[in-house]
Length: 182
Image (cartoon, rainbow, N blue to C red):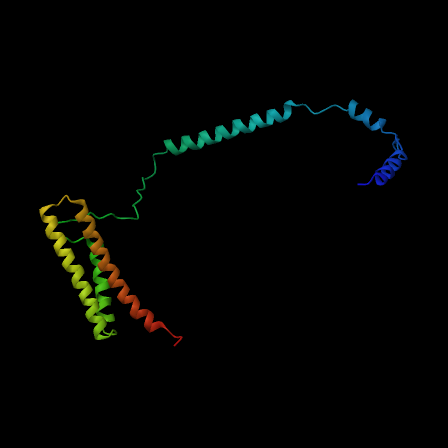
C-alpha cells in the first residue's frame, strides 16, 4: 500500500481509546463464584465406577446363564449349502443336483428347439455333440489317470459349458418371444 494510506491508518489508530471501563461492576458476581462451594470431583468418578461394575456384573450373569443352561433341547442348524463330491472316471455324473438341473434345462431345450430355424437347431445340436464327445474323451483319460487334476478341471468345465449352452438356448427363444417393441 502507499505511504499516505499507512499514515492515515496510524493517525486513526492513535485516536482510539486505550482504556475501556466496564459498563457495570463485575466484582459481586466474581466474589459469589469464588465463595460458592464447588461440586466434588469424586461424584462423577463414583458414578462411572458404579456403571462399570454394573455392566461387568450384568454381562457375567448373562454369560453364566447362557453357558450353564443345559435344560433345553439342543438345536442343530443345517447348512444351507450342500456340497456334492464329484465322481470321475467311469462314473462321470456329478450328482443329483447337477442331474436335476441338466434334465430340466434339457426339457426346456427340446421345447425351445421347435421355435428355432432348422439351421440353428443343427448348430446347437452340433455344439452339444461336441461337448458330449469332449466329456467322453476326458472320462476315458480319467480312467487311466484318475488323480489328474487338470483333467478333472477340464471335465467340470465341460459340464459347465453344457449347462451354459442349454441356458442360453432357452434364453434366446424366451427373449425373442417377449419382445413387444417390434
